[in-house]
Length: 498
Image (tube, rainbow, N blue to C red; front, side, top):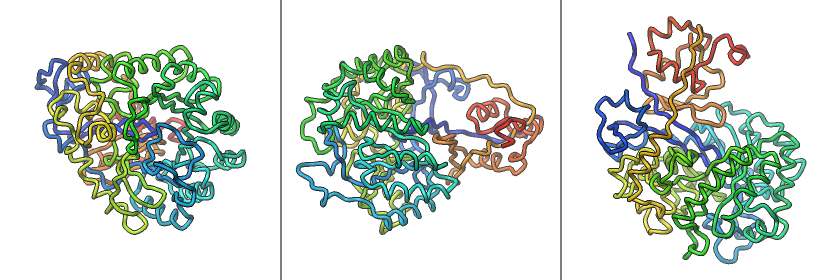
């Protein structure tokens, strides 16, 4: 007898840990907002969902999937777009917080207890607190659940640091920033002469030890005309992914209009990013969420669609003084992890995931499940409230954007099922109130209800079962999804035998 199975699909933009979760209950609709009654059969072909109840937008997780840990507030750069709210006015190093080694032990205890899957070490500039970086990696190396990345300007990173990083099995990659193709532009934006040379040399050091590096170019009026040149530079440096992300207004900035891209400039930047990827032969992306109607020409910009803000939903931020926040860009904290448990602090963020922050203008939109209404931090800074409209929302373009989204959907892969299947030995799983959440490497592999969780927990599946046996329990189409995601693998493959 076939069991009732359900997968909540999740895709991961790893560097900023922004995950997309497809929730239930839903109605399905076409590009003209007409309801489709046979929902499950139309989901793949239409790709659109209308949320029946905003409170059902997200599943309630037991703890964050991803934690961003700010190990220090100190930084040698002074970027005009810096979202770190503490960087306001004259600050001296003595007034800026940094985690101690004892703090790290307390925080890592909580991260391990909560079974967090991914940890992003960030700052400030984390290499200004290098002993803490390596203390974190030492702890993570003994935790089979945790994978670690670093966000850094690479100022302060040495050859020895890069060599040591390459030795950790839990360590995955580095994200850095290049804001222009030449030192004059980059150094002017970061407010630090010589920063460009330090960052590019840092990339070369990391590549020397075969550490993957991705780049984020924060795009403002200052550098919007230099996207292709910067992508070409990154390609020449051996960068894995070139991201370009629209600069958002920092929460401590009274007026960011001299730097922020308007709607037309935003769309032009997306076009330039896509062209840069094609011409330079480098994968491209963006590290924040945009409202679908703001993007408009979705088919031209697939790297921007299908992502929602995951602040307080799957991601939590821990500051260099231990304060826990939902969003890197917002200063509101929910307590201190040095005094309280991560579970308790996570529970206080419920309003970030109960639908109350969805803008009124987006609540009945057919695109809500795709973009979630855009960035809550940008809405707060520009329009004064966390549940205000994202400044890029363009309601007259909703219908066109939805049509474009439907046209951009690629059919699911038609994978061939092997004769014997087994659970991927690299799969990491955490129990949840609704079933389980799973990760493979740096990416979320999905969220599953209890029936699916029980199936994936079958001891026989860990060593391998025949397709005939498994097909009596699980629909073949669902098995294909699990194989396509890498959750199930060929029991005869090298991966299975490793």
